[in-house]
Amino acid sequence: MADPRETPRAMPRDILGRAPSLADTLAQRLREEIASGRLQPGEKLPTEHQMSETYGVSRPIVREAVGRLKHDGLVTSRQGAGAFVADPGAASSFRLEIADLSDRAEMSAIVELLMAVEANATAHAAVRRTQDDLGRIQTQLDAMQAAVLRGEPGVDEDMAFHRAIVEATGNPYFRDLSQFLDHRVRHFIRTARANTARLGGLAQAVQDEHVAIFSAIERQDAPAARAAAEEHLRNAATRLALYLKP
Picture 1 (cartoon, rainbow, N blue to C red):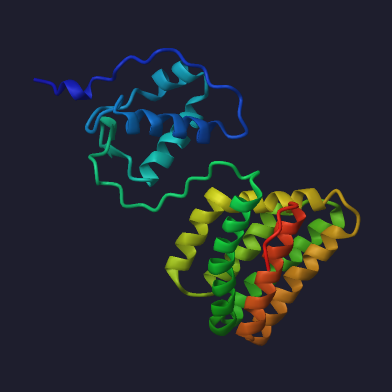
Picture 2 (picture 1 turned 135 degrees about the horizontal axis):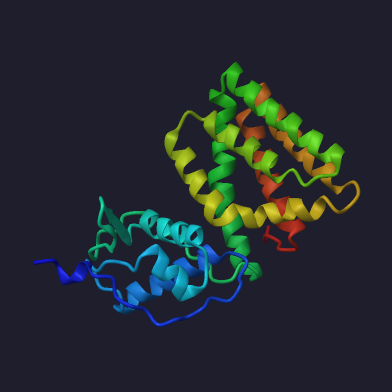
């Protein structure tokens, strides 16, 4: 006899409003369904088609939202059967819930976290980097400079620059945590870069901060690399008009 828990349950139609990130909104809605008990452990999630119809979003958005729940350990997949609510206590992934990133104190705390991770990773990269690592970092630094000269934000180049630095640590845990923060937090900091692209001269000032980081890594000067990375993040917070206390 088929397990009744594997039969997708019909859901009331509840169209989501158009938010900056529909996947985030849908993922949070599903988290609430699980936390409230409306979706029970072992219960099969509605199909992609059903959730697409219920919430008025595309199937790729549904896949992205469910993927985030899998990453958080709240949902598991069964080959050929679909996605199911995980058993209580099964989640082992770190989760970072951000309620209001327009809140000055909350954003300051997030930047403090980024400084603890990224500044230390930069210091380790300065000590451990190889010539090949340095070449990859240099390539992304040059790509950012080219973007500045074209008058473009260079957000992708910026992220690739910092990613190359983290890779140079040779520590896979720095890499994994940095990727997590890229997805969950750091894109809010990157908003500062997009804003500065519209202000004459400021984009080059940001690039000079990256040059300072690169120069310290090139010299293998760990304290200078850490200080340059910290200064860069403080300035990013300032560019968002969210200041850290001294």
